[in-house]
Image (cartoon, rainbow, N blue to C red; front, side, top):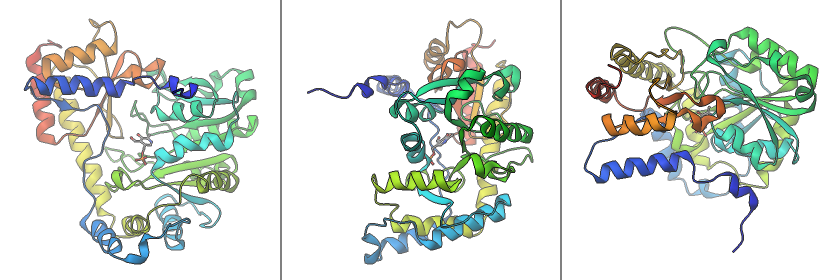
Length: 388
Ligand SMILES: Cc1ncc(COP(=O)(O)O)c(C=O)c1O
């Protein structure tokens, strides 16, 4: 058998290596505190599950959905109006995604031809780079450095690269650095995209997970944003619906239309009971969003305050479900630190190198364990003496 050359770029993958390390330790009868994968584990509100369960029992809901229901599109438009103050046209400016991962892995196919230039943040959530790679794009990394509070410096992108670029992806609050960008950055982004005629995709997966009373809205609320691009939004973290696969692409009608056309050839739409659950999630009682935010914030406090007290200096994240922490000086790289940390404490984290060249020197911890387990993690790290 011969397989596609494009598969060669995927290799074994760091998450498979981490899974192997986890398996080996469990086989030795030892405990693992897994902070490596950002899989949300706060369940959805009961009312959302009930609506989905009722719809699941309706025989008529087992046809191909093909299209998004008007009810769902209207609910999403109202949600954008209510939450972000942004007016969306339900018919032309919104389409559903089977989770934003679906959009992130496919949208480049609708915008880029092989060899076209795409601007991608570094470090980044891996599919930001893998989606364009599948489309054969040439990637230009936009560094997100600590000295700039992890915010992309648009003025540092070389003129010839900006001239060639067709598409760029930006995302704050950011995975993996957890950084937020000031509103002024978004104004610069719209001006930059206009100047160089670049389509922008803003991934807004964490707009509802910002802490300490901070607030963040939508890229689409910036004047001119809809002229240059789209935003992805996801119900995975906000409403605990990760496994149901619900996301949206919203904004520029030409970009939305191209993605819709591509997707209409790839999938037959979102299962109708899931569309019903989405409507219930975003139109029903929103107190669940504040509860989820508070739960992640408490986990962050227990983990970060404890680890800082144990001698591991790090910034407390202003949002997201991640902590981006520096690798101690005595380690050669992030992967060797990850191995030693697991060995000495049972805590499994992701090496920063998994997120791109600028990720080396850091590790990412996902806030996916309970407060009690976060406390046990802190104790294990204290006792290991790594930071003594
Ligand atoms: C920045 C970012 N975008 C998108 C996703 C995927 O979300 P979804 O569940 O909507 O596919 C994740 C998941 O961790 C993420 O961190």
